[in-house]
Image 1 (cartoon, rainbow, N blue to C red):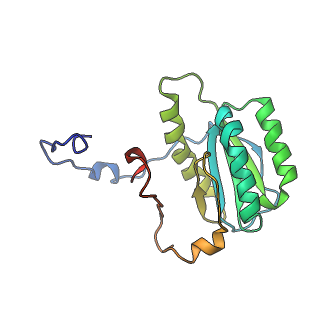
Image 2: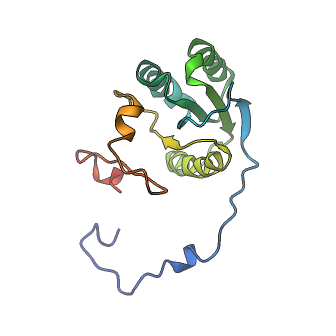
Image 3: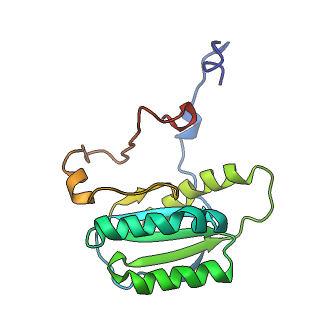
Length: 178
């Protein structure tokens, strides 16, 4: 923030304490609602959202994934504070799109201050958990995006040698830049 506002830190910032010991994150708050129908090592797309974002955006993301990647990807939907209507819709999408091998989990967040920040942060904590039990790579997508190409066309054009791959768009607003 200091740099963004045109200033410079008054002293050196030491981040080594963040990597000196492995932090165990609590995973007991997750509830599995739907499991994969079959285990495989295909990449899994993780979509984390609340009920509102699921109905406004994630459904259309599912349709785009089905049209472009039904044989290439699995999908995991992690919903915050899920309700029956949303869960029933996800079960219906699982039945409608069996090729996507849809799984689903939920966690209770409740009414907290700055809930959108909680959602944005918690998806990475859940991703860490899912990565630890998943058979293949994990792709984290925003619920409000659409997929236009098949993953097999993209994966050959990028360097997958690292542990983390970050994609960005030069037209993204500054808060989405890494």
